[in-house]
Amino acid sequence: MAMAIMAFGMLGVLGMQATLRANADAAKQRSEATRLAEEKIEQWRSFSVLPTTTGVKAYADIATAAGESLTSFVSNTTYTRTVTVTDSTPAGLKTLVVDVAWADRAGTAQNVRLFSAATAVAPALAATMVAPQMNAGGVREPGGRRRGIPPQAKNFGDGTSGFRPPQPAGTAVVWVFNNVTGLITSVCNTTEINNADLTLAALTGCTTAQAYQLISGYLRFHTALTQPTAAEMANPIPGASVATSTIEVEVDQTAPTTGVRSCYHERSANYVEYFCAVPVTSPTPASWSGTLRVRPATMPDLAANLAVTAPTQRKVCRYRALTGAEPNPVYVGINVPLANENLAVIPAGNAMAAFTCPNPPSRAHQPNT
Image (cartoon, rainbow, N blue to C red; front, side, top):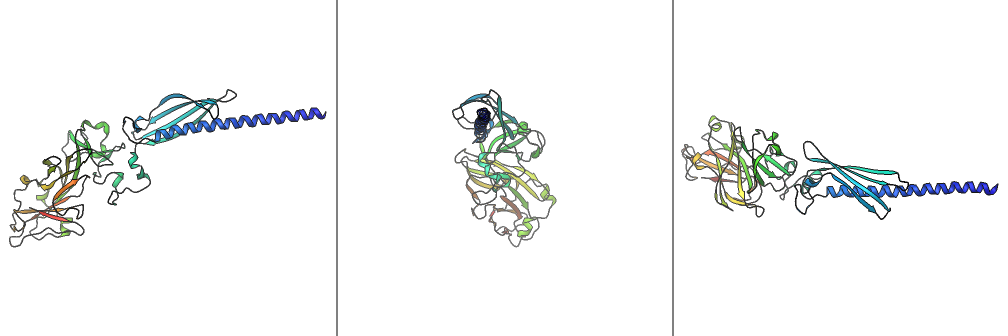
């Protein structure tokens, strides 16, 4: 009797040990399968560029793949890893699903599934999720893009932004910016009127042979025959002559190529906003030199020098966003997009005294003739 009871007890112990061993084995296999799934997700998320690039992991290459057989020497098990990728609508996010399947010691099918996501954010901009964007001068970058890209430019979510400079309705030019460098990397066409409605699909005839740097700002006017003040130039009084003005801005480029670059203009009741794309050598040194000026043909009454007092003639004041960086009107080696490079048109004088350019606090200015 005692031997029989002991035998039954030993059978129970053996069964428990077998169960524990099976559970431990299953836990090891599941742990290994989870590691294989995480490994694939990390491979996906380690892309270093957005578009497909030879020899480099790219966001564009993340795609569904057929099952692959993997043998683990740790658990002595063969796994099948299957990957599924779903693109969001609109594009900009990919949902990642990894399934790892195997058969346990008893031949029962097992499976581990992990989910993740990858966003179309250039790795160079990854810090935008945790830190405010600053440029080399310690100035916060608006919208996680290079300072100087127009705020109204449409962010396409793939590391680029599109901007339609002011043009009449119909087929119009669109500049495509690299969000990191601020360079205009391609010039396209579109029939979209508003920048907010731009999409990559709406762009046609894109050319990438030439890169450009943007310079933009405002042209303001002072028409009263009084010495203008800083406050008046900051908030000029609207006038009919301003709204119908044909005065335009241009860039007289001296390097890396020479030539006069026309600009796009948008006119309102009290100012003219301009946008100029200046060709540069790319990728190095992606810079230009030259002079920003009022197009002479659009302002024939430009004073010959700063001493002129004739009220029928005009002078141009120049206000720099780069405070004090260059005290002269010549731009040298400009390798970033520039915004708020502003001009003001004032009367030359009141016949008795010559007017001078008011100097707002913390702003360098240069009178031009």
